[in-house]
Length: 203
Image 1: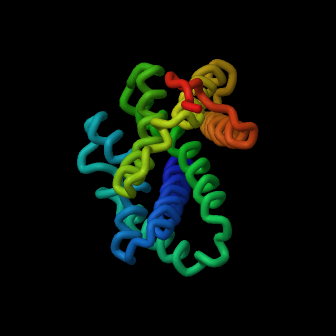
Image 2: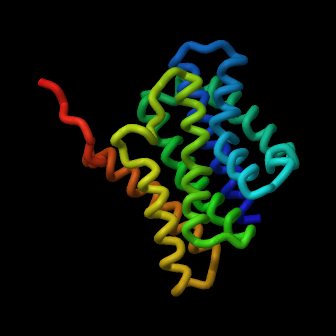
């Protein structure tokens, strides 16, 4: 139940981030819904296919479809209340990657995978919905820029498996690991921390 709650919260966060991007691109209602959908389930779909979960999770439980549609309607209706689109997008995207990282890790653990593979699966789950969203919206995906994004997911995953040796309650582990991802992402943006670039900026 706790695991599904995290999954649904992540779905809501990513669906809203997708709506914000789509509205910023001035898409029509259908376009907004499609972007919300692929943002919310893109990473999870890829994850399920890789570990052999078919049909993929959102096809087996209609609650995900209802949640995405409901989140889309909410974001559209209250778009004037969701001020500062850039900040709102960043916030929901950050919450989404934190929640989806631990969901991906749990999926890997259920499949009996090695911890490093579980971390990779968590990172993929967290990041690839946003990658698909950005590509469809003709933007360079955040994961391919200098920003601390996938790195935060990896550190959160490492934190999970480190604390696993000391904490036996899995729910606490998921919450802490998710918060680590969120906090690292927030601090990186607030203090303008980024990965080094391979290219020198031109004067």
